[in-house]
Length: 515
Image 1 (cartoon, rainbow, N blue to C red):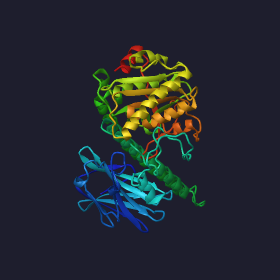
Image 2 (cartoon, rainbow, N blue to C red):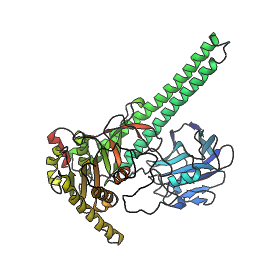
Image 3 (cartoon, rainbow, N blue to C red):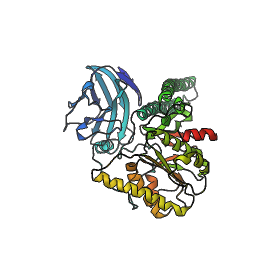
Image 4 (spheres, rainbow, N blue to C red):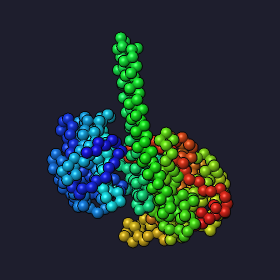
């Protein structure tokens, strides 16, 4: 039997799996069958005492049994959890394969959690693996279930510039996990592969950070014990105890570092293999896909995530296309971010080569003028350089989206015949209130006309309840200043994002932007 630490995983070989948990007090076991977005398809994917069975999953009181071959074919994972009516003590989660102990994971909640996702059984390739999670929820089972889609969401409404309850924190490029709202992972096909690599990197990083923290705390405790008695504080025995404590610390850290390096080397190889096979929109600039005929992609690459204190691994960060959330390039200078914007546009163009692409470019300060010439064949109209011309262009797009929305609601919708890219630079300076409202409307309805929205401007202000701030809260922010921490959605560990930039050479810019 293997003893897992948080973030570690191991392969499963049996079709029959049983989950049990031991802790003080009374708890209820349960399971959630989830898709790639870590959310249930409907309430029947929640297996518990009041709903004791789903395909491949059964509730047996003191255990949850899985028959992996009988899980629904589109199930990505099964989350195995415990929940109690009060704060949980230490929980020992166990997994059995064909009745034999296979893995054990000890979780010691420290933040008042009353529900815990202990283990995740998830697909990888043609098989199944087990991962130790330990994700806690102070709000108990209600918060845990809501986070994974058991509570139906409220009906969607059109975006309105009206006050909303202020959020607890601004939306980041990679959102810090907030269990009450759920975490959309936005994965599919090539995009899914990138997110699976990112998830494995995040889990490995969490295991490293956890081991380092534990080693430091244990060292502090043992050093304190070694000097706690004044009578023996300066004796050879105390010196030996301190030296032994330091050796235990160093050995644990060295072992954790070695495990993380091994994981990083493997993930680095996976990234290189994926880069050679990915369509251009998801690949690095030097990948072979950029020299061959463009292939459709389900996402675009924004840059690479890294953490200097955790080694040299750099993980591609990718999002779906057409963009399901606007991208906001946070910058005080559009000109300084022009190559970042150019990279985004080039990848958006490359992602959907089977549809004609039209680009609407608002550039009040001329910071994107170097992009205008190579983009000329794709421009939907003249580059907007005067703030007085913004409203007419946005009204045209908003009207098209409104008509598409009416057709959709009447059951007469047709798929978009083109891919529209709107780059609204120098925002919000020079934009009228009505322009902000229309941008909000395009954010909600733009997918009906195949629109991807990119905003470029200052996003450093405090989020409030005004129209600009409401729009800002709904965007995916891309920081251009180094040192801005972003947080992965599985473990909450900090990363930095090194945004991709369009190559500086004019001939390369023209080739990438027109692919």
